[in-house]
Image 1 (tube, rainbow, N blue to C red):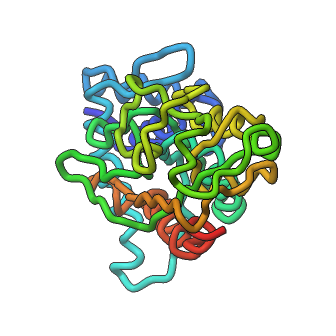
Image 2: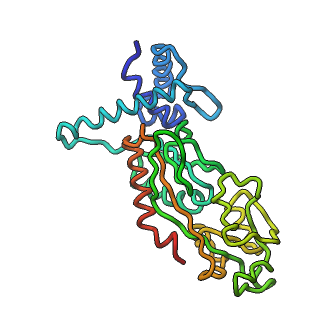
Image 3: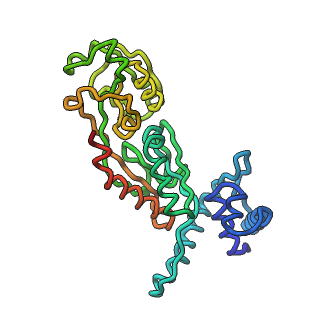
Length: 298
């Protein structure tokens, strides 16, 4: 039979993925964490972690135990509330948030720096992929996406929207002129995504404006596209949350070209009530609500 106290060590290692931060959180040394995990695995007669160069990854059995252990933790933390006592601790642990590269790099990373100052016990891991991360398989804890994530037992809600607009650099406009109407756009050079590598169709937003006949640069990276536009390569359709970070970008046909995308927040129902998960989802929902004007207006 395993020692119930070993679940605390298991949870911290699962959340941090490495011995040192887990040991620091538990106020013990690395060897103690390693020994307690080994004892837990012996007691359960199963492997809970795969050891790799980057740290510790949960096995299938580890993922199952993680859900159970978090539920036990939440029950323990709720005891003071259920007894009507005002005893509580700040939420802590690792929270993995998955999102698209552009909004992660140009917007969320700065906002999570503010979150870290307010919630020092929570370590946010911001993961970016071209495809949607699978929350059901626990590839991440929380998803911020432009389309609602799919999967069993997911809690998904719309938390806001953002606007995109056409931008160009002064260098490009000086050489090619400024389009005065939407019809003029067909005579201009564009920066766009790589057609056959678009993993999420709503991200290929330029097609909502036109199918450009002259694309001079393509990239799977929105950050790379924005850099190319700012360097004078051509016109590009960019989110306001990223374009606003570069004063070299000049809006084009701002009143005529308006493209919107919605923002969805997803979390698996097994972990939605965990303190650290609640803290991050509440922060994100409040953020998108408070900054609606920044995300949608020049």
